[in-house]
Structure formats: C-alpha cells, structure tokens
Image 1 (cartoon, one colour):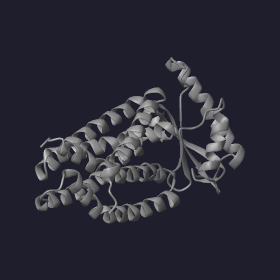
Image 2 (cartoon, one colour):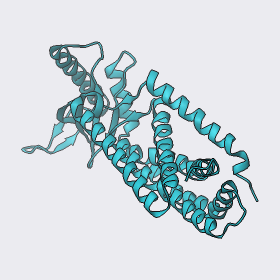
Image 3 (tube, one colour):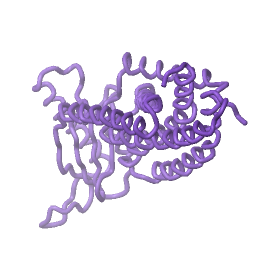
Length: 311
C-alpha cells in the first residue's frame, strides 16, 4: 500500500514552496487586472463577416501601441465583439484620461474599419449590411471592481467559517481547521498562478474561486468521513496510519471524480467562447490544486495535529 504519510513532508514542502512563490508574486508583481478592476473603457463593435477574437485583439493591440494590449476581447451576441482596455497608469487627471480614451477609441475603430471595412447600413434602417460599426462605449469605474472583490473576499471568509462550523459539527474541530487550511492553500496557489503567469483577472475569476472552494471541500469531506469510520475501528493504530489508510481507500474515487470533472471542463474550455474560457481556466487549475490538497495536505495536517496530542 502506498504510504502517503511517510512522504508527508515532501508533499507539504511542495505546498509550502508553491505558497511562498505565490505570495511573493502577489506582493511584488501583483495582478494583471482586467478593466473591470483597474478601470478603463469597454467598446462594443458589430462586425459583419468572418472574424476571430485573436484577429481583433491583434488589431486593437496595434492601435493601442506602446506595447499595450486590451485587457480582454470577447465575442458577444451574434456578430458583436467587446474590447476592454485600461488607461495609461501615468495619467493622473480625468481630462488626460478622457483625451487618452478618445484617442485610443478612434485608433481602434480605424484599425477595425481598415480590416473589415467602413460601416454600410441597409437603406432606411440601422441594420449593418457590411463592415464594422461601434455600437457603444462605456466607462468602467475601478470602484465597481473593488466593491466586487471586497464582496468576494467577505463571501470567501464567510464560506470558510461556515465550513469550519459544519466540519467541526460533523467530525471534530481538528478536521475543521485542517479543511480550512486546505481551502486557503487552494485559493492562495490559484491566485498565485494568475499572478505569476500574468493572466487576466476579471469578474469570471472571482466566480471561479467561489466554485473551486465548493469543489475542493467535497473531496476533503469524503476523506474525513472515512477517517472517522476507521478511527472507530482502530485499536493500536496511530493517527498517521489511520489517515494513510483512509486516503488510500478513497484515492481511486477522488482521482476518478477529478478526471471526469476535468474532462468536461477542459472540453468547455477548448470549445467555448472567450468569456466561457475565462471562467473555465481557473476552475481547471483549482480542481487540480484542490485534489492535491485533499489527498496530500489536509489528511497529513490532521494526523500531525492529532498525533501531537491535540483533540
């Protein structure tokens, strides 16, 4: 039988290293914030004809210039595409930001018209017949994003407290603390991946984090349920031996559940539009991290704590 507990410090060491790297990147590098959080402009264009978001993103990047790129380019309903870009960080006054936005909007519009043609409307209507037309431009306030992030943080904290209470009531306090440590582990590494790789952090990412919290605790509870059963039957086993037996007994289920879930989410990511991919990617990363923590982190932490004499 594979003895996870004998190698617990290797697995915990990997987790600690990933957490340190994640925190270091978050502190010193920060995040690649989407316009929803950093503020900027959201432009909606209707394009008649074949186009890809990659083509539009390239054109928009060239129009923005100075090695800048849009924070996101997403296909919307029908032939619509939404382009978001942030302000230049060197601009301090509202007048400068407004002038910058007007300049870049005109540049993006000209670039798209150069590729897909100037707008031609059906006679007597506002229906686009060919070319590209700007349908709307909206100012995105960073205060909205900050409020959303603040709400998500409080929801995560309340979820962690609720999970602590539930797991403590169902099992014991030690199990509840171990479960919460596993959730913190998953969230820190997930947002660390986004910081290290400079992936765009938008509203979909916040929703995905809350989804990952729910998925991650599921595997952990299954393991703790088996630990409780094995503890009742155990006679001379140490808590480390009980934890190892319980993890191995649930290992196949955990892996099979993860694989089947990943297959679905990966297909959604491959076949979905950009907005769906932005939601699916953090879930894919979170599922992998959550499975790792359920098997190699929460169980060993519980056993270490219990064998140290903490009830």
